[in-house]
Length: 161
Image (cartoon, rainbow, N blue to C red; front, side, top):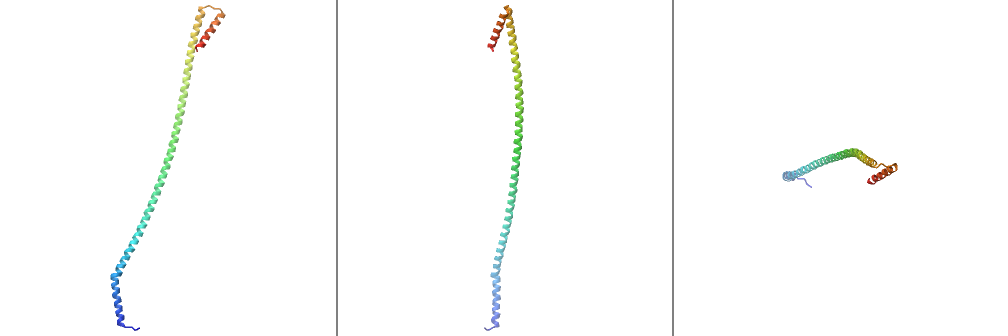
C-alpha cells in the first residue's frame, strides 16, 4: 500500500464536503425529528403524570364524598332512631293518660249508675211502702193476714224486677 498525499487530501476534502452536506441535509432534519420525538415522548410522560395526579385527586375526592355520605347516612339513621324512641314514648304517654281518663270516666259512670239505682230503689221502696201502708189501712187485718199481704206484695215486686 502506497501513501499518496494528494489522494489523502482529496479524500479528506471529499469527506468534509460529505460531512457538511450530510450535516446540512440529513443530520439536521434527522436530529430535528429525533428532538421532536423526544419532546413528544416527554410531553406524553408529563400528560400521563398529570392524568395520574388528576385520577388520584378524583379517587381521593370520591373517597371523601363516600365517607361524607356514610357519615350522613349514619347521622340520618341515628336521628331516625331518636325520633322513633321519642314518638314511642309519646304514644305510651298518651295511651297511659287515655287509660287514666277512661278509668276515671268509668268510675264516675259506675258511681252515677249506682246513685241512679239507689234512687230508683228508694223510690220503689217508698212507693211500695205507701202501697203496703194504704192496703193495710184499707183493711184492718190481723197479724197473719198482714204477713201474708207483705209476702204477696214482695213476691209481686220480685216478679217485676
